[in-house]
Length: 179
Image 1 (cartoon, rainbow, N blue to C red):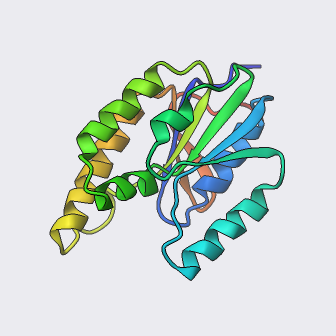
Image 2 (cartoon, rainbow, N blue to C red):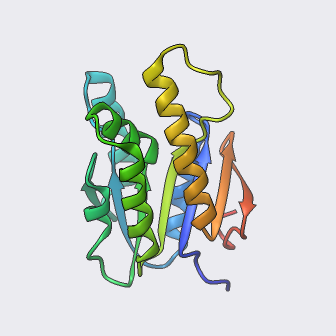
Image 3 (tube, rainbow, N blue to C red):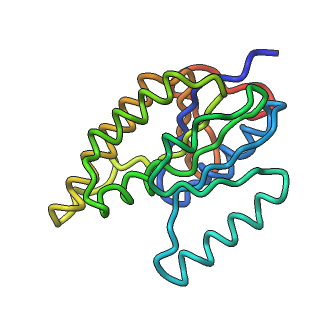
């Protein structure tokens, strides 16, 4: 059996099935499951979506809420734990809404990821296949998210694009059992 990748990036469009597929991938690691959630519930619809995701995951996951401080949330875990971060898109947008510098936040995250002993799976939205947004904040976000995705993909052992719930390896090999 091939070893579980040290760093995996799972990307795709909105509602493409990337989160569900990433959860199935992480379960193949034969480790304790850590789920780091980055979403914030600013309205009832998002609160319901978060509750639905939590219920779908079940009790086998240790959940950590980290809408901003992902770097700290990634640290201090046992070697027999695998970490799923869902998602970088929400994390980056949280920082931009808080008026934090996305380049500094990205650099800190990349540095932390390079030092990890645990396998980490990161979920992110692919923003490069959409239209150019009509406002400055959205264009800054699209550019920052695209840069972050590219930098993490370069550092990753496995990069998977998910479309219609189906994984396509862009870099590396999908572990047996996760295909």
